[in-house]
Image (tube, rainbow, N blue to C red; front, side, top):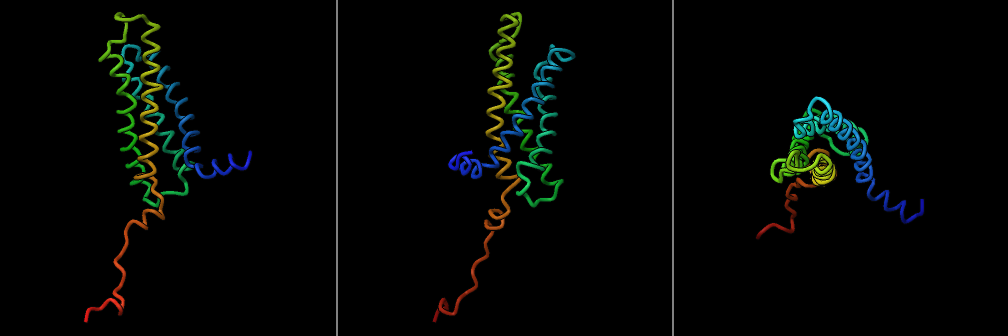
Length: 170
């Protein structure tokens, strides 16, 4: 790898790892979403999407905790997991909202549109737009609240310096 590219990769290693985890969970999400949507939950695509995101979220927690952000944290695991799933819950709403708007706001579903149009709209709204919005939010929120940098966390609480003999008033 060329030196400038290597330096850039080192500088943004968490983002790159997060992207790999995201790609993996994107595949999990798609497999579960389409597996359910094309079979048992055919009339309920939003339910299929929610289940898919929940499965992908569990995979995401394990991979992010053990690989992407393994040098961060310092919280008790239960607290960290609770925060992760809270952030992911917001991500679930953000990733499902475009599909809901597409299907029920814009009525991009059969018989109002062709099956091909419905499937393209479902893919673009749920798997592209929803995933991108949720991804940006999750990366920011995971770094800020779930896996904070211990150095930044300990540096944010500062005690007032002890009075110095030169600071005393006469």
